[in-house]
Amino acid sequence: MNLSNLIASREKWLTWKNIAPLRTQLKALPEVSVTYNIDDTISILTDIDESLQKQINDFTYALRPWRKGPFQLFDTFIDSEWQSFIKYNLLEPYFNLEGKKVADIGCNNGYYMFRMLKQNPKKIVGFDPSPHYKTQFDFINHFIKSDITFEMLGVEHLDIYNEKFNVIFCLGVLYHRSDPVNTLKSLKKGLEKEGVLYLDTFMIDGEEDMALTPKKTYSKIPNIYFVPTIPALKIWCYRAGFKTVEVLEIKETLLNEQRATKWIEGESLGDFLDSNNPKVTVEGYPAPKRVYIKASL
Image (spheres, one colour):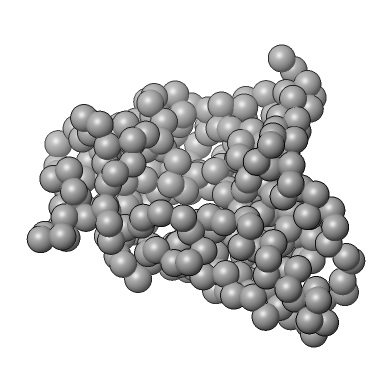
């Protein structure tokens, strides 16, 4: 299937029975002239009448779960599961997006992409196959009216996409892929010459080039395939064709960064850890720790 047919096919996902009512609510939103502020909380600021505020509040609640954020939409504060500014603020000192073509792989509802607008990139494209997250993005962008592009595509489509990028972000995706080296090769194919990849993934401590392979779940998450040591992750990158790999940060995931709120449905980090020993998961594996790297061509 060529790219245009693939995109058209994915657009049909917006008619799924659980998504179509949300798209109807989205289309019913009025045009409102707003001011907004892009910071740790992405805020849309203006006075609106009580009727529209209720419409906004009802729609944001219907759009649960909100994984990334937070957002302030008029008087409605979306306290997302992840305090995503912690990750973004950790990485931001390491990149300059001015005039660059940028992709965010696994972009979720676009929180990071909205944050990137302040650096004046030439173009931002988000890739995420979820029609739910696209609807959340379209909701926020209904008011911000950015020129960000959201494609319901995955990392595997980078090699056929009609753009190559100077910078690619792939945050919290690699451990969901059953073939991490091929995933890194796909990311490489999406880069321009001398392009740069910023990636974070779960890691385990160790000096050997090895990886944890969870038997069934890791932190109650079923689709976690490999949790590498840093030496193993570097080897994966080199085997995928990257020339240099720089470790930027190492950080444990803490309860101030990921936690359950009324804006999600179900459990969060506090439920994934052993109640008697928070240094391990409920399965007995090392508790989540992430490594942030910069891989260059």
